Length: 137
Image (cartoon, rainbow, N blue to C red; front, side, top):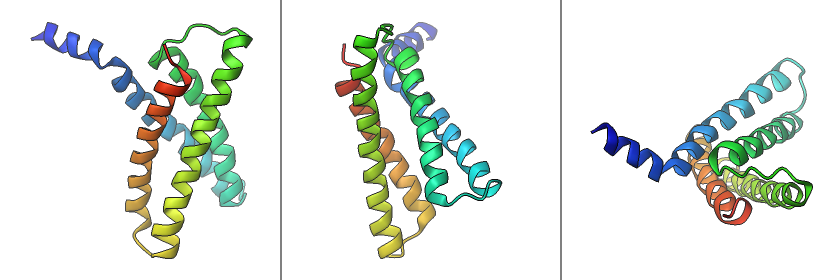
């Protein structure tokens, strides 16, 4: 039984570790956003930009090291990798904002539910972007 579990974990390691570090990235995002917004009283947009930058930096390092096990830290590898990673994250961030704009701001649907829906979509889009565009083997 334990061997079956070990085999499954090894087979799906990149997905499982991506989800784990995706949750941690979300925690980092909110851990930065909340104090910047509530304690420093910066606008929500500025607070979100700051938290997005920190979360993307955290996600890049954890994805590179632990999820996709990309060990090459040479400038030749990191610069294009980082550019593609940030581009993918920027694309999913724009997608998330557009969905929330339409569903919550324009249609008046529940913002909490749609934030959760968009977070799930963002995790999926970011996984495939990272897997097939950024950290290709």
